[in-house]
Image (cartoon, rainbow over all chains, first blue to last red; front, side, top):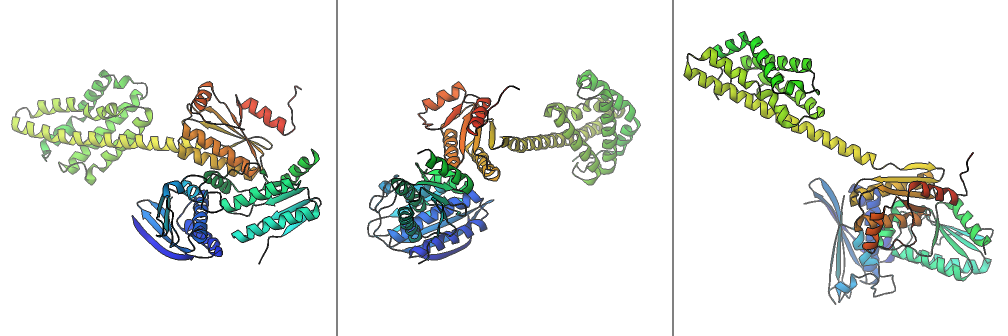
Length: 134
Length: 120
Length: 284
């Protein structure tokens, strides 16, 4: 597996969620994804970017365009230094929310991508990695 | 702060969302609409989302809230023009917008609103 | 690799006619000649051409192995032969047998002509046997490649055939699903249906699953998701052709088809779609 290009952008304010969506759309197009797959990736990124801003108190989004044999993929990592999640298993059930949302952010995002990793502990911040292949 | 324009067409209100909405803009639209419904005694709200290239859980929730709020204020809501890839993604996300009426385009949405109002 | 001697090549050249007759007689005796997929004349032409090409190849290429340019015509001939045999529905054994069946008359000929020199005979038999074996292998290889090409093309055609979205009436689309559904294929088919709804502005889509042998949990879920997505877009969906076994499976799996309209067959679904559009069919 090779990394073709990579980069990073801040996800601090609410406007950054919109910018992250636009950036991910462009990356998904570069990656050669079909329209439906682009939309799934952008939507997942929107959910996670909002979580980073609202619950994580702001953070960053790292992106990587991947090559693995004939297929290409896009990996996004959202990381923050926020309060973290105590029970990650509970956080991955539909309807669980620490705020006022629908509780579909994390679980919904996982359903939209090929690979999903959640890494978090109280006081250690949160790191979510998602990957989608063409 | 910018706002999404709300047009009045007889007894109906028409909203066309053409920008990539950030969350505050969505919340502002929610407030503006309920205010306009009460002020104009509108019987229906038509939301055209054909220009939206994605709907996440926040925007989905806004649509559901607008629909429920306007129902309490005696107005019907119809969402029109959802793109196929947006619909597929919303379903995968787990958001099926129960209780929200939909139509393929503005014309059919208007027809549906008129039918709903007439049948009352 | 043993080489073919000039003496052997002379024997072959002088007895080409005899060889060909013997070979043809053997082929028709073994039943290959009576197979109605190849005419007697066609087979005779093929044996004559092959023998001719082989003797020429052996003369020019000697015992250098069949990979060289001297054997190019022979290889090309065998590739074409394999392709046509594959298309005619022969198996690899029958195809390779075309080559191997020349061994008996060829060995008999060498036995007769070189019998006075046993050492030379053994060497030449070995040499010619090696050549024929390589040619036989090449034939089988080409045959297999042709068959794989046929299979790949059929698969592509099937996928295209399996995704037609049909306009049944103004405002009514139908998607007849045929064959076993895997999740990848179902996804592609469903997306094309949704796309067509936008393009045509059809308000009712009928998914007909008469041609689907079984429905498992995954496929049923895909169907449910598609129906939900179609509704979000503002159109409606009817599922038709639900056979008793599939209905049983769906109930058995505990799947909830709540609110989804199902009809026994496509005709009933179309009648319902027309009714919803305010149309009715009357006998003229």
